[in-house]
Image (cartoon, rainbow, N blue to C red; front, side, top):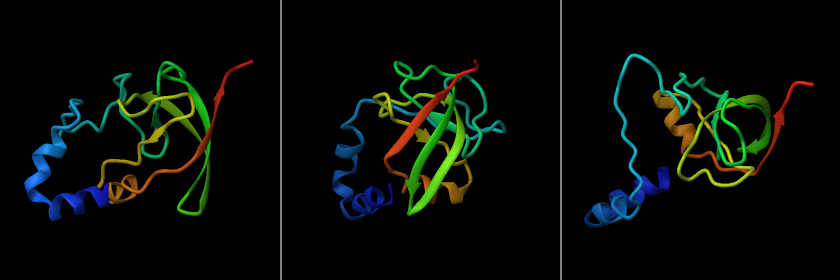
Length: 121
């Protein structure tokens, strides 16, 4: 995300071209309630993920393993959202929060991962 913003600053005449290339629209608005996902539930920073619901049912409890910025990440997360760019069985977008600090972290997340769906016996 940071590199895209920098490119847009350096190429102001192409901003409309780039922003209008993809017909997917996302609207944001400030409100007292935090960000909500596809289930209508408030997302929890570092615990909520967006998934492809064709492969992973919304509401699923997942075990996530990844290496982010040379740091091993092993945690239980919950499939509470979907996203237009989240396609495939082993894809997830970790919600890192809404604070300004989260913007910096979220823009750098891109890593291979392993996911396991946790089911009761």
